[in-house]
Length: 155
Image (tube, rainbow, N blue to C red; front, side):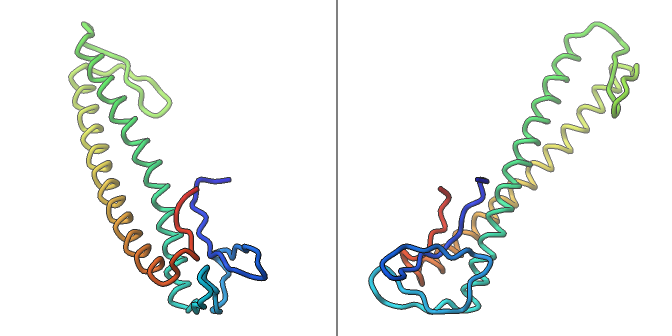
């Protein structure tokens, strides 16, 4: 099973626990664990769907942040290796080809690539914080209405 949170509503129906998926929930009446009924409105369904989309984006951002951090570490390692080398011309990979390039130019290129990756990493981190804040707000709204009848946590 994917690491995407399963957003579901638990509905008490004839004594059994049923799950209603978040992508096809009719605006209906849902019975909570305490026996009271709560209507699932169109707006509620939109909030549930939005939470699911945000959760998917959160996982994408986590993957992108991991890749950006690894790239930054690789650039740092390459920069350190350049400091240790005595040669004035080094092999530098451009695409799938290695070219002989002056050491100073390679240092400059690595520095620029590292700056670009760092800026991209900051942007991704900011977006992740924004997504988490929006998800927290939706959790408050949905848990406020549905209490224990909705599960927005990852398993």
